[in-house]
Image 1 (cartoon, rainbow, N blue to C red):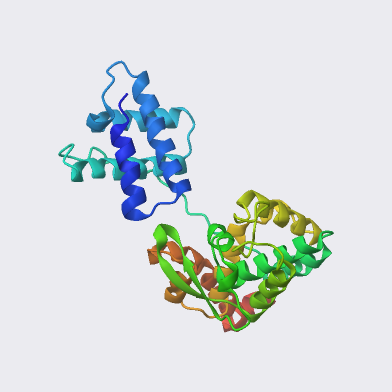
Image 2: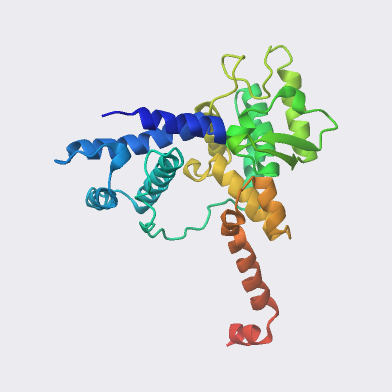
Amino acid sequence: MNNTYLESFLEMLAAERGASKHTLQAYQADIEDFLSYLMTQNDKQPLESVSKEVIQDYFQWMGKEGKSARTAARRLSCLRQFYLFLVKEGIRSDNPTYLLQNPYLPKTLPKYLTELEIGLLLDACVLLEDYRRGLVARAALEILYSSGLRISELLKIKKDQIRSDTKILRIYGKGGKERLIPISDSAVEAAIDLKKNDHHLQSMFLFPGRDSSKNLTRQGFDKILYQVALKADLDPDRISPHVLRHSFASHLLAHGADLRSLQMMLGHADISTTQIYTHVQTEQLQKTVRNHHPLAKVRDKT
């Protein structure tokens, strides 16, 4: 089957939207799964000219195969963008996914750590047997928790971005979009300590990998985080860079930050994405009512 249109679509995502390598791989995998499905059908329609009915059958087949609603929603979003691209390019006159309904996705609250657990993680960094690894862990955790960066953004930080007077980090996030992120004094101090220890390494990165010309990989950082979690006597399955990002956002809101500022710091294009963290405000309101409303106090006594 001709994949020319898929290649052109991926080139557009890279050139016009600045899509990352991982994003491009995800789009390619989703469309290739649809291509594989088309190959199994008796009336093999070309990718560029499939009907709405064929796409509906594909999602019904996914359901029978036990694919999750989240996977179905991601693939529908991918196909929507692909066929919109074909419409804009004049390859077809309509988007066959236009009227298809999104799969129902139950809302899940973000998982985050308590402030005490964050403190335990930070304190456990010095317990690692490898001194330098402890410095890496401390600097990374301090920066992640004080800024809410994505792990990909953290690992790309250059050494020259951190100085003793650094208050703001300039970050290039998804799609190459720039944002300015405040950083805590303790995060700066931890990063400076790491730089001093790594002064002999000829690397531009604050977190260099085994090959000092490249940054530390996500897998490499996950191993460090796993060791820190064990030293802190916390379940490693509960700890991840994204959980730290959720913790940053949840704790910031709990201490009075506004949603719009949080959106800017997290680099969310749409504030609706940031609104998942309002669960913290809801919990705070419930606590306020329990502690201060006279009827709530009466019920507690009865």
